[in-house]
Amino acid sequence: MKVVHIIIGLNVGGAELMLKRVIESHSGYSDIQHIVISLTNHGPLGRQLVNSGVSVHSLGISNLLNVPFAFVKLRKLLIQLQPDIVHTWMYHADLLGGLAAWSSGFSRILWNVRSTDILKGGSKATIVVRKICAWLSGFLPLVIVCAANASRKEHEAVGYASSKIVVIPNGFELDKAITSGNTKSSIRDEFGIDKTCKIILSVGRFSEVKDHKNFIEAAGKISMLLEDVKFFLVGRDLTGDNEKLLSMIKATGNTDAFYLLGERDDIPKCMRESDVFCMHSKTEGFPNVLGEAMAAGLPCVTTDVGDAAYLLANPEWVVPPSLPDVLADKLYQLLSLSTREREDLGLSFVSRISENFTMRDVSQRYLDLYRSVFNSNSTI
Image (cartoon, rainbow, N blue to C red; front, side, top):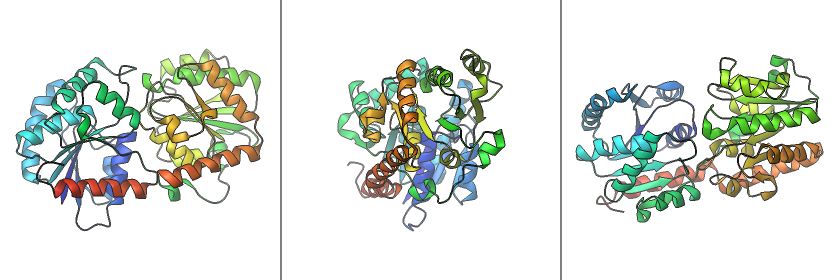
């Protein structure tokens, strides 16, 4: 069974990481082969997949003018690869990849939808693409995989074929998230941060939907109350070259409390060396990074977006989006707990992941889906 995945790109992101994990989790099965097609370039995750023996193709789309040529190239590549299943990831790949597969004679097409409310930060082009996908959803894909119950409801509301939607949440690898021993020295030493300081961690690319303004304003309020707290911002474009980001931080009046780590490939390490995790987005589907923080045993505060509240399953630490005063108050409450209380809270989040969202279970659900579609007569 040959499964060809089509995705926009392979930079570090929730959907991209989930695709990589699904592929890696099936490495021990002899009846399935995964191949990846990136509409843009290999990216860091693509290079990692290649190094692990996975075939990755890139079409090099850099702007709209490249799309017609890439579409023709994609059709030729699919005809050459002869996939049993074509699995596309996210709106643009669902549309372009779905049409390329269908027009090339391949009927076992799966879509993967990762977002919820794209009106909060989504581009006009993406909104148009979603409308087209909603119209095509009745006949083009056999199955539409949503990463969250909130995402399912949102897409049913905008016209996606509800009978074709299944929900498969993100899965998390506890063995990689949890390590023994105290590792709270290396990153602190790297930036000269005293071991007595508490670190609040934010992870996510710089984007309107991630709402860094919300986090930075909340952090600024906390920094005026507590001197022994520092804030790590990890993710693409979270660097000193980002003038918009620097302007937000300067407005707090306490720039020394913020550390811009940029994009890193050691997120689990960053989590293990932090004391509190904060997810501050305006919108999410099933937030991968929140689950990773929970799996690492971090006490967490999250905005009530997508399936975040369902994932956390502790309403005390869930706040409305885009209200920095409320977010600051909740983070302050969490920091005011004793070390033992925070550790116990973190352990409760580990149990939540272990009992409900392991990668092993999610891997099996994808494998069962692929086998079901493969054994069907283009219907499911």
